[in-house]
Image (tube, rainbow, N blue to C red; front, side, top):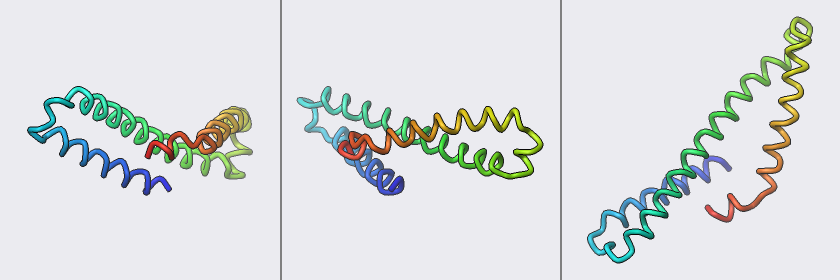
Length: 103
């Protein structure tokens, strides 16, 4: 699903860049610049979100190891608290269809 969103973002960025490069855009240039700015911001946030998820998956694999749990009980307890928070945030974002509707 993330790959589909990424493809749609890439297509939208290509389209808006092509439109902004058109010489007939003068009348709508300000509106196009707003759209381009919003799309670039969304793309940056989306990229950071993916990076955060990838890093978290890496940490999750480490902390779910029985050896690590036994060796670092305090750190594991802290990780569990943050993990519950992050999974809750991801679940709420997944339920919110605003992102899907925008793409």
